[in-house]
Length: 475
Image 1 (cartoon, one colour):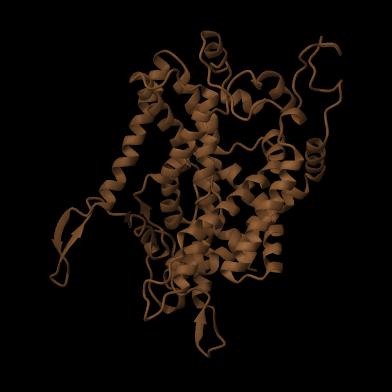
Image 2 (cartoon, rainbow, N blue to C red; image 1 turned 90 degrees about the vertical axis):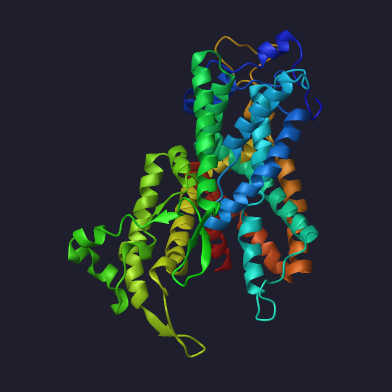
C-alpha cells in the first residue's frame, strides 16, 4: 500500500467515510480488542492523504505561535488539536463552497490533519520556550542588554531532531497509555467530540457549531481587551501612558486575609517580619480565558488537585521559605524565596518536580508486564487464533479482524528513529552548545524516562510540565 491514500470521490467512498454511530465516550470504554473489532476503520477508509497532511502542516505552523505565547507566560504547553479541527473544517468547507475542492475532507482525514498540526504545535514546546530563552537570558550583559539570539538555521535543526526524537519515543508509549490504560488526553477527546459534532447532521450539529464559534469569538476578544493599550491617561508622575480596557489580573481575594482566622493567616501575611497581602502570593483572578477553557477540558478532578497544590505552596511552603536564609559562596545572605510571588519558581518547583517524576515512574513501573507485552507485540505477529477473532469466524475467513501487530508502528521504526534522531541531538549539542557527547547520550537515554512522566501528565491533565522535567534533568 502506498504511503498516502487517495481522498474519497465516489458516493460509495464518501458514504464509507462517514462517522460511526458511536460517541467518543463509548469508544473510550472499549478495550483494545473491542476497539479493533468495532471502531477501527481499516485501510479502506482514507485517512493519511496529501491534503490532510498539507492542511495540518499549514495550521500547525500558525498555531505553534500560540503555544509559544502560552508557554512563555505559563510554562505549560497546551495542545492545538481542538483549534486545528475547527479551523480545518471551516477552511475546507469554504474551499468546497467556492468550488476549489472536489470533495469534503472526511472525519478521519481531519483527525489525521489535527495529529499533524499537534505535532507541529508541540515541536515549539520545550525546545523553544524553556532552554532557548534561558540561554538568551544568560547571555545578557551590561554591554549587550538584549543578549545573543540563536541563529535560526541552528534552532531549526535543533527543533527538528528533538521533535523527531519525541515522535519515535511515542511509538512504545502509545499502545500502553492509549490502548491499554486509556488515558483520556483531554484536548484529544475534546477534538473527537468536536469532529463528531461538526460531521453530524441536523439541528443538534448546527447548535454545536454555533456554540463552538461563539466560544472562539469570546476567546479572541478577551486578549484584545487585555493587550491593546487604547486608553490614554496620566500616571502618578504626570507622564502620559496608555492602558488596556481590561486589566490582566484582579486582586479579588485580598479581603479574605481580614476575615479568615488569624491562626491560619498570621504567618503567611507577616512572614519574615513583613506585611503581605494574598495578592502578593499570586492569589489573583486572571482575566485570561485560556486557562479557564483548559480547565473545562481537563475536568473538575484534575483542576481541583491543581488548586489544592497551589494553595499548599502558598500556605505551607512559601512562608517558611521566606524566612530560611543561608550564606552563599560569595558571602551574601540569601533566602530560599526572595518574595511571595516568586516562590513558585524559587522553591515550589523543587517540591513539585520530584513528586511529579516519582508518581509517573512508579505508575509506569507497576505496569512493567504490560510494557513488555507492548514491546514484544510490536516485534511479532498475532497468532492465527486469538482474541481478535469474533465468534463465528474460522481459520479460512478471507478478511479476519486486524490485530494490533498488523496496525501498530513496527519496532524497527522505533529503533531506527531513535538512532537517527538521538545521534542528531548528540551531534548538534556537541558542535553548537559545547555539550560533551557523553552528556548528550545521557540526555537521550534519560529522555525516555522523563517522556513517560510528561506523557502521563499530558494524558491526565492536558498540560505538559516541560519546565519541571528540565529541572529534573539538570539535577
